Amino acid sequence: MRFDMLTEIQMDALRETGSIGAGHAATALSQLVGHPVSIDVPTLEVLRVGEVPDLFGGPESLVVGVHVRLLGDLGGSMLFMAERASALALVDLMHARPIGSARSFSADEEAVVSHVASILMSAYVAAVGRLADISILPARASSTLDMAGAIMQAVTSDAAMRADVALLLKTRFCDSDTSVDAFLFFLPDPAGLGILLGRLGVA
Image (cartoon, rainbow, N blue to C red):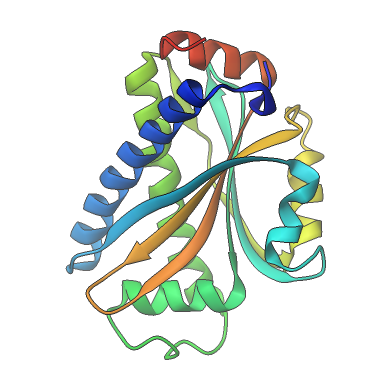
C-alpha cells in the first residue's frame, strides 16, 4: 500500500495519531522546560520523497535534520526537518527568550533541537503503537545541519529505507508569544503502512 493511494478516512486516522502524538510531546516539553508549550499539526499531506527539499527552497537550502529508524512491527523512518532560522527560533522558544536571541547553530543549539525532535518523534511513535496495538520503537536519533538534498539522500540511502512517498505532518510549536513551524515526515515501508492501517481499522 502507498500513501498516495490513501482515502480521506485513512488520512483522518493518520491525522488523529499525529494530533495525539503532538499533544503528548507538548506535555513532555512543557514539563522539561518549565513553561507551557503547545504543538499543533495544522497540515497533513502526502508527497514524494524527492519533493521534500522543495519545501525548504530547493536541495541546497540549509536545514536541520533529525532522523530515526523505526524498529519492531513497522519498518521505515521518521525525519524532523526545520530551516536553520526556524531551528534557532525553536531553541529560543524552548528557553522562553525573545526570538532572535540565538544567532549561531553550535553544538548546544543542535542538542536542543535534537532533543525536542526526539521527544516529538517518540511521542508520535508511541501514539501510533498504542492506537494500532503494534510494537514500534524509534532507534537512536542522528542529527545534522546540512543541505536539504544531502539529508534526504542520506536518509533514502539507508539499507532499510524502502519508502518513496512520505506523510508530512507540518508541526507548529507555540508559547504565549510566538510560534515556530517545522516539518515531521513519517516514512513507513509499504508493507508496514498496510499493517498500520489494518490495525487502525481503515485498511
